[in-house]
Amino acid sequence: MAASRVSTPAAAPGQFFTLTEPLQFEGPKFKPSARRPLGYRYYDADRMVLGRRMEDQLRFAVCWWHSFVWPGTDPFGGETFNRPWHAIGADAMQQAHAKVDVAFELFQLLDVPFFTFHDRDIAPEGTTLRESNANLHRIGERLARRMDDTGIALLWGTANLFSNRRYMAGAATNPDPMVFAYAAAQVKTALELTHELRGANYVLWGGREGYDTLLNTNLTREWAQLGRFLNLVVEHKHAIGFTGAILIEPKPCEPTKHQYDYDVASVFAFLQAHGLEHEVQVNIEQNHALLAGHSFEHEIAQAQALGIFGSIDMNRGDELLGWDTDQFPNNLPHVALAMYQIMLGGGFSTGGINFDAKLRRQSIDPDDLVAAHAGAIDLCARGLLVAERMIDDGVLAAHVDARYAGWDAKEGTAILKGRRSLASLAAMVERKGIEPQPVSGRQERLENLINSYL
Ligand code: XUL
Ligand code: CO
Image (cartoon, rainbow, N blue to C red; front, side, top):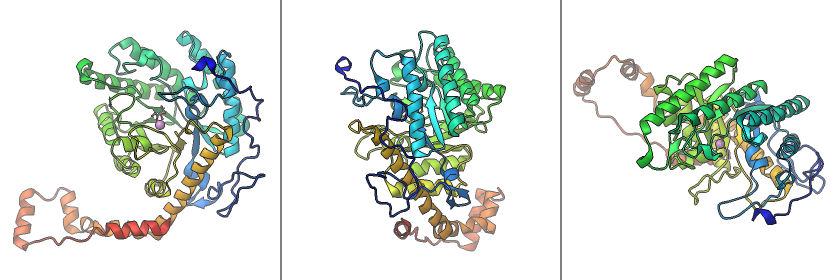
C-alpha cells in the first residue's frame, strides 16, 4: 500500500497552508469570506473572563502527534494525508526539521500560546538510544529557537513508551527489568528536554501499562513496578530542578485490555499507595473519561475533590463507537459543563487545554487542520463564556449550597467533626422522633436552567 503512494511535493516554509494571516477575533456575527475564510467568533484572547484574560484562562495547546505525525492510517487502510514530510525514503531528520516549521506555522495561524509533544513525534528514533537522544537534542535546539522567535511555549512534553515493539508488554510494567531501564532512560531525556524548553508540565500516559490476559500477568508485581517508576520520575524532577507539574493521564483500556491508570479515582489510589498524592496530578482526557464510563465533568470534579486536578486533553468520542476516536470537540453543552467545573475549581494553574484531537482521515486538505483547531478553540471559548454566565448568575451554586445547608448547621458539623457516634445518633433520632422529609432534586428545572445559559 505504502509503496504505491504518491507524495505531495515539499512546500517551502510558510506555504503549507493556503491561509497566511493569523486568525483574529471577528465577533459572533462573523461571516466567512474568500479574503477571510476563518476567524474567531468567541475566542478573544484579551477579553477578561472570571478575572483573567481569555488566553490565560484557556491556555490552548496544539499537539504534535495527531497534527503532524499521524498520516491518516486506520486498521483497514493506509495513509491518506500524504504530507510532504511523510515522503517515503526521505531523510527522517530532514522531515523532522520540516515538521517544526509547519508546526510553528500552524501555531501562529491559530495564535495559540502552547504546544505538546512526545519525544518520538519531534525526532525519529535512531538505531541506538544514543542516536535517538542526539536526534532529539538537534530538534530540541530548533524548537528552542522557534519558541524564542515566536513566544510560543511548551504546555507539556512526554515520552512515547508504547509504539516500539520493545514495549509490547509494557514499559515500567514489563516482565523484563531491562525494558524498565530503557523506559527510564527515555523518560530521563524527555523530562530534561521538557525542563530545558521550560515546559509547564510533564505528562505520563501509560499506553501499555496494563495487560491483555491475567494468564501471563502478575498484577501485584506490575503495580509495584509502576509505583517504583513513578517515584524515580519524581526524584529526577527534583534532582534537575524542574518546577512544572508531573501529570498522569488516566485511560481505562486501549491499547491494552485493562490499564492500571483506569480513571481519576484509580490513579489517586495508586498515588496514595506509593506516597505520591502530593507530587503528581492528572491530565484528564474527554474521550478517556467516556471509555471509563464517566462524563468528562465527573472526572474533572473527582480530580478537584481529591486535589489532583492538573490539565485536560480536549477531544470527543462518538456515542456509537466504543473506542478512542479523538475527534475535535463540537458539542457546546458538553464543553460548557466541563468549563463550568474547571472554573468552579478556580481554573488552571500549570495546566491548560491540549487538543489531543485528530482530523477524520478524509479531511486531507492542509487547511482542514486550521479549521478543525479554530472550531475547537472557538467552542471552548464559547463554553467558557457560558461557564462565566453560570457562575455570575450563581443560581446553580446557590441551589447546591442550599441542598447541603444542614451540613453547615449544628448537627451536620458535629457529625463531620467526629463528635457523634452511631449510638448517640440513634438516641437522638429516637428521642426527638426524627423523620426526615425528602426534598426535590429538581433535576429537570436545573437542566432547563443550563439551556437558558447556552
Ligand atoms: C492516547 C493519548 C496520548 C496521551 C499522550 O490515548 O491520549 O496521546 O495524551 O501520550
Ligand atoms: Co491524551
